[in-house]
Length: 175
Length: 220
Image (cartoon, rainbow over all chains, first blue to last red):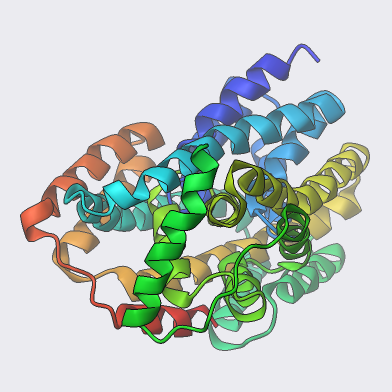
């Protein structure tokens, strides 16, 4: 329970770094959750973040999972509200102002500029993520097979992830 | 008072858009319950990422609440803002459909199934994280998630990166975070400001209308 104010601060802050999606915020999330607050180890954070990919709806709802682990159900609720409400209110406000903003010349500049930065931040996040998630030949193979499979086929990505979980059960056990 | 102004305003614009583009006819005025239940359904079935494609299927194709042009507008507003596409689009669409109450209902509907699942996952993780077998499975999940996220961004990059400047900003962001360890907020502010300045108004290229169709095809 005593961690709840910290959960609110951390996830409220992280939510504003999710330009273009959750992956952009991952390196800072790792700093806050692993290094600063010691809520999870790097491996645990990677695992929890990954399970978010299995969820329908917003895949960053895995923040509720972190909240649950750290502070039980109140923690889950606090993390989810802190992460989704402030940016939600911002989206609501900007949505209402949009007619006026549409004529604002800098709008296109912001959209174009942040578009490429968002891709860079996502790749940076993915590199940070991959350093813990991809550590041996089999995990390289799984990541590569999923990459190709998602790009080249119309199979739902969830099936690749579940397949990888089964492979992991048999082949990725560590002593 | 404010929420009353919105449907009329959006409706006027929608007519303009249908005049310009041949999007499917839209029929609006859903009840608050209909808004909530529709987003609850999307929030509950959109497995495997690609939530924008699910949103388009329901909001444009099935419910006909939005034309393609207006839906594209919502996604481009959402992309420029912090926050996830799934929730930002839910709020923007919910507001246009039913004012602040619609936005709140859409947001809660979108989030509720994932929230319940992730709380359950958190409870399970608390019990299982020390078990070697659970960790073995999760190592597989993490490896596949890396491939999935890489594939998603590879596709976005292929579509939206053009020219030397874009490439420079991507590389600068990667180096800033992973090599110089400047931290995401600093990189976002510095590289972001530089990128916005580079594409400042008189050099920003206008997005052609045909981009809409290409974008819709790319979703599926």
